[in-house]
Length: 53
Image 1 (spheres, rainbow, N blue to C red):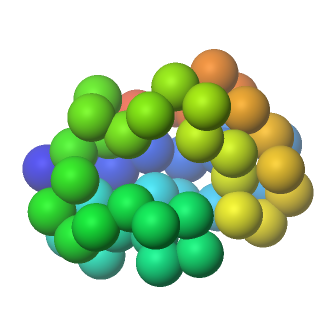
Image 2 (image 1 turned 90 degrees about the horizontal axis):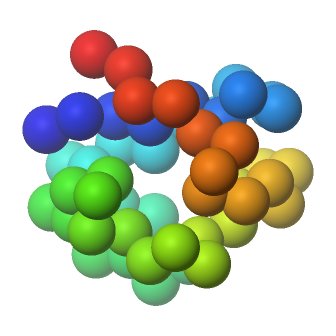
């Protein structure tokens, strides 16, 4: 599972954990996260994230 990091604030989306604050269930791959996803820490758009290992 690929993680994604916000280029603005450094928040890391971990697909194994999901994102409770944005109603993203654990096990949701980054590619399956909705395009209107906003960073729960700084509000940046999904396009502001980069995939990391």
